[in-house]
Image (cartoon, rainbow, N blue to C red; front, side):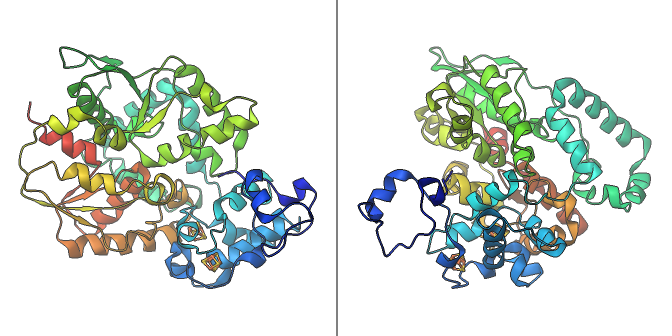
Length: 440
Ligand code: SF4
Ligand code: SF4
């Protein structure tokens, strides 16, 4: 939610108990959300125990209450942060758990965004993050080259060399990205057009493929296409689409994020509906309506970006599909992007219930972030790995054969941790499981 500073309206201070002359509190509602003063944080501490970084490093500035004061310091008072304060602020995974739990509805993520955009601090960058961001903007040719490199890596036994290189500070955090590579990794091609498997097609939809998902998770794209075409849609995958921009925005690089937006607006200009399957991308695509306000555009100029889970759930055709039984247990990891931003985490359970025999349980402590945090699993493994390991321990205790998640970076992060414990099951997106069990 984008906010305007109350000072923009000529007020130096604000108390919810008082009006300002003719301007009552009710009148302020029409002005949109405001940036909360840190004093409006009740210091109740309700949010603190669920903050993933505070759980690993229990210091005030590594939790939301302390960070709110740091944010106020830079955003409202324009004072600089010292190096330790900057590090503590940058360590936030932007999971929004504090905001979801807060009884005062503190607009934490808005404050954080403003601090990032105001260049008050910069999240840590590593060579690897630069590489990921270059990949995000690199387009299809870059990704194809990278795919070739991965295949060479698999065949040449370079893994031991890379394991050694991963100890270099510049490459710290590379393990999560290497995790999926030792298994057979042969990205399936994703068709540009797939015809509806229905006598009377319902229309045409586009699939949003993202950046690293095109490299690591084409199976989920193909599963999405399979389900959508089976329920009656022609499915297109337009070539000139870009990364959603979240990887840039979370690193405070708003002009690059807006370049992604512009490219996607152009790519999807003729799309009736754009279906995404990664909740991380979806959370940011849903912010486009606010980003374009800065571009002097109107929300109606955006194509509708829709979550594949919502789309399937609301489609009569999906509920008519038949699925093969699967007598096994799955646990569902609920990514922060899905719980706290999209707020549609219950859909995963409802859709998977269509598979007969499947036993579905939530992963313990789903309200706590796994630490992936976009690029955080790469830039701060000292915090991200212990967070991940709590999830992996919960996975082991569950006895489940399959871990379900809708967020690709969470999947990569959790896979790397699960491998360390000898977990031999699968980590997969729910639409992948649905597509596998679909009766032809
Ligand atoms: S957004 Fe997440 S990591 Fe950041 S302060 Fe809030 S709970 Fe902690
Ligand atoms: S829950 Fe809200 S009011 Fe309580 S400490 Fe956290 S931010 Fe402050």
